[in-house]
Amino acid sequence: MGIIIAIILFSFIIIFHELGHFLLAKANGIRVDEFSLGLGPTLVGKEIGGTKFCIKLLPFGGACMMGEDDADDMSEGSFNSKSVWARISVIAAGPVFNLILAWIMSVIIILFVGYQPTTISGVSEGYSAEEQGMQAGDEIREINGRRVYIWNDISLYTLTHPNETTLEVVYERDGEEYTAVLEARQLEGDTSSKLGVISSGSVETGVLGSLEYGVYTVRYWITYAIDSLRMLVTGQVGIRDMSGPVGIVSAVDSVYQAAAPSGLLMVILNLMNFGVFISANLGVMNLLPIPALDGGRLVFLIVEAVRRKRIPPEKEGMVHFAGFALLMVLMVVVMYNDILRLF
Image (tube, rainbow, N blue to C red; front, side):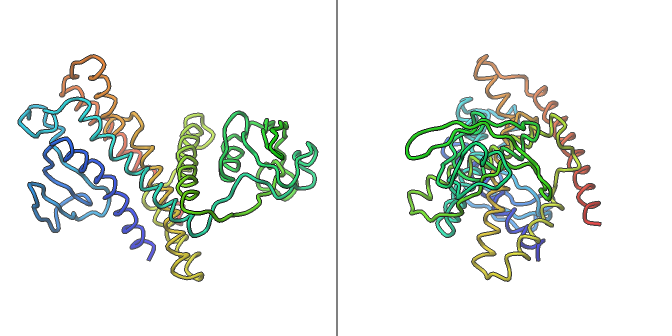
């Protein structure tokens, strides 16, 4: 069941990503040759309005083919015949649509279950927050200069900054701001270091509040992705800690199995929450300046906009090919680690 749900979820997220490219291409008068879901041989396809829409054999990935790699095609309606800013908007649209999708799903979830504010319901005995005089009703505003909007922001900071044992916390009480220097401690029985503050739990909000806190939720997942990349680069986590398609399918199945006893609504909301995580991460990863990804293409387009001259297509193509090859190697390594974890 997990495999089927994962394929449906991935397919929806990928279609939304490619839809971003497609809509901006059409808005800029760019010809789209093919809009596909999946990779490999075409299973079924139909041409509509000059674009072939198709489903392919392998249920991974997708494509919006605009002839962007054909540097010699400068005909009317071709990708390369358009201004550099038009091309930038088309390439950036995919990742941006992923972030928009993550926001839409976040808003729906918050409408049903609410959100967790940064207000504390109390402090735990033996931890620094108690010693510094924090109390129920205090609303945490910042941790070490980073603004926090939802409780997950607080948990994320302590999780992704394990070496920072002393944290400057700005909190609000009765309309006044105070500062406390807290020490993260790991007492007996703890699995990680804690500040000793206790969440007040979820609160309900209306439509406008859901729209606002949907933004904060997407911000949290963007920060999560960036912090994870920082930890990977600095060696705080390794490639073995990464998950690929196999690991994600396993995680989707676990989410489904855990939520199923609570009914269909909880299954949908939990899977949607996982979809927020996947979509936001896909948006961030695709904006990274890595060759073969949207971010890598954006780098070349931005350089072209600055120097007002296009980088030779053959050189750009070589860079993207090398980047694609490295990504495939990384995918194989991550998938191998995923399979090992299953057994």
